[in-house]
Length: 173
Image (cartoon, rainbow, N blue to C red):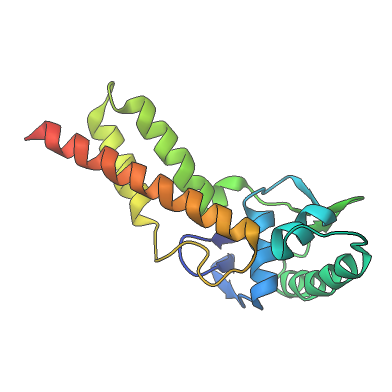
């Protein structure tokens, strides 16, 4: 399964596009994808989607499970039913983090930072590839405070990558 967050949220299983789901389901998938392979607690998911919860979060936690079920069914139907796993305290998206475009983008920028002074050609190639992953505003249409924070962070990384790439190209002239 691959997940694309650098634009509208999309997911694929072995090349077959998956229905992107409701905005809440997209927010859920976003949080789990950006922490691919790690458990995300139900409380974190609820607060990331609706914001801090004052008092009893039980009803919101139950509502979250209602949004998870269709995503799990969809993944089972496409053959990757084990990708979204229930854990003792939450959920885990059991995919390689490198299959999430936003994570791969961030790793490419980190690698380019290291290579800028060592191998500018390789750094430029990494930055070109990283910026080429973008299809629009990140997490487009995804609600919640977690998505807002991630959207800002990803735009900041995009700006940093663009500046790094311009510097590398200016040095070539």
